[in-house]
Length: 78
Image 1 (cartoon, helix red, strand yellow):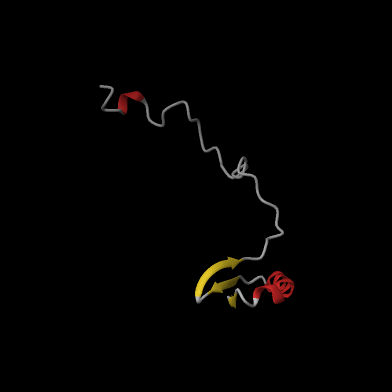
Image 2 (cartoon, rainbow, N blue to C red):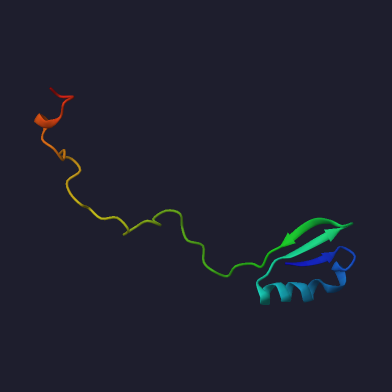
């Protein structure tokens, strides 16, 4: 991660944005020796929708309505 003071920012801003985009590494900007902001490169990938993310990942292994064991085996029902 690179470092930069606020005094150097106006002169190098365009060059820095190009470098951040090309190298895909974040840059920390310091003001009076204190970290002020971290600039991260933007991602070009599409955002996956939250709805339907798990579609097609499950398997039906049996009937979910009928109990796995007969009712006569269950102690609670006796």
